[in-house]
Image (cartoon, rainbow, N blue to C red; front, side, top):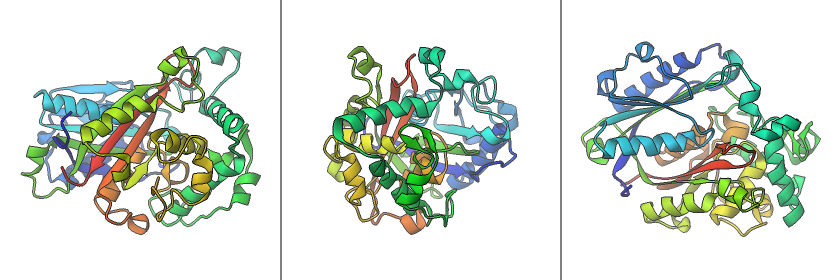
Length: 384
């Protein structure tokens, strides 16, 4: 992907929360309406559709007639993948205006892409389910324990992540925990979920939808109503490589190839990034991504956060909307939503001053065994 050739010209985000009582397809329809309004487009402008799910989409309900409708699912890295696919479709002449759509309504009718709400199929994480290893928390706890054993990372370090994300979220009306501060003591006293994770180390599913409209940079320049954000670089990596090397737990993901490709395409360095929006299912996820991207040295992620490294005035303001742990869970779309808001100057009380470049990561869906996650890196810019 040549830097700056692809632009995001519309974003629609529905209300995010618990118990909204709205179906997934209706959430996507609402988000589509908002995205079209944001881009100043009519429905018939959408000639490509990518849906973050295992399942087909009911295009009749959405009122769309695109050249293609592709379901895609790679867990929390799906968001990154949909933008890569949209860019490929546009650059290969398959479409001019592609909608990337997401919705989930776990408290109003189940998880997307699975046959039954909260089915074992969605939570088994490979063959260890046969011996009782169930759920994302138990899988990610292995990363946390590895990090604690090798580097001396503590529960208090993970608690510092939770407190900092809450400090961001409590000032953001779009966050689930708006106006609800926590302390490190609150974190330490919250119930244990899976050792070493307390409840406040964990994200929780929320209902909500999001749609992004993607087109070429040339087409974006003709759209007076838009405030485009450009996809400057994108990269994917897969931790199955580390499984073959028997080093899977030391790596939250195989970030190196994803980051190298994205930064090379964008033609920027880590020092150029103004804000990072990480996929954060658990607090250890931010600690390990800070290290593997190179924002701090290996083993120093916990102290880096505890010393204010991801605060608004820190070395790299991160997850400024509260992330998925304290903001809302729109899978891998949460980081992209916040990156878009930052680059468009729409982040309110947690706006990073002069934000021009943002990193957004995605993470999820194993390669057949737990902890072999896919990773996605996007470098987004306010200018092409």
